[in-house]
Image 1 (cartoon, rainbow, N blue to C red):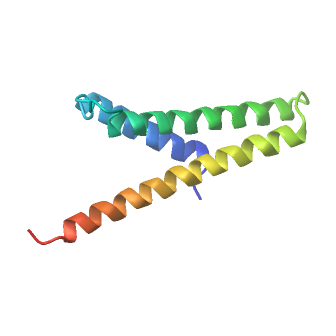
Image 2: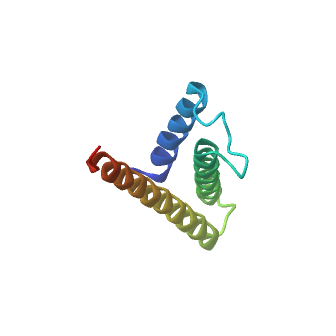
Length: 102
């Protein structure tokens, strides 16, 4: 089973690929482009994972409370689950579009 850090790194790599390919450079006048929205979401998941990792290391060193570690890990789990759900919906929408007759 993939850990939250592995999933966050995979999405960060995707964001880097989108950024380097120039996707989303033409931002819409009304708001963010999809690529920048995806980049922000991946960044927040990565930050949550970093906080969780830092809390875990602090607890191993005897400097953190168990409740803080459990809360940080739960927050990371929720963030990754949300990101995976959004990914699944995007893939389902793409598949629906591909099934449409031309």
